[in-house]
Length: 114
Length: 116
Image (cartoon, rainbow over all chains, first blue to last red; front, side, top):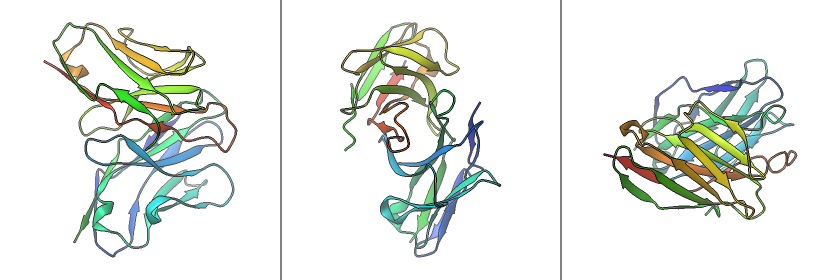
């Protein structure tokens, strides 16, 4: 069965510095990978996805993510963090070749310090 | 806005009662998934409906049940509520088996259920 691991409960970054939020996955076939963001008392908002092709994918609000098949990772990155990026971030995997359900990691809380 | 709407936004129920949560999917989507998100946790997959049939289920007891209607809207029913059922319930709509373009799910704002 597919699974997602986010090893960090919280990441603190100073405003203007680059940020990385880590994610590793396990899936039987070719993975469809996603990042979502959640603000307080809100649903999840889609940020970006990897389906196939270029390993570096770009998404909303200046975020990007790098797919690494050998390390089964899909880390979220941003070159210069903003205070408004502070939120809860979830990595997710969809197994299109098996049951097509989307499974989420436990989330990483990102704190951008002014 | 994602086009996915959930009702009600907040709900308080007593232990042992039953509850029905509703979700209206984004236009053109044929799949709806329900998730339970406890405080400080990631969304836990409850089940998924595709063309009105359940086609995937997470580790939740049978008292969690659902329906998907011909217009692809959906309900989540929980019987015999327990205190631990208190959580944010999220509905997500997507296009199943839609190839490589339509792969992501879009979420509603959620229903905050409190069981007392």
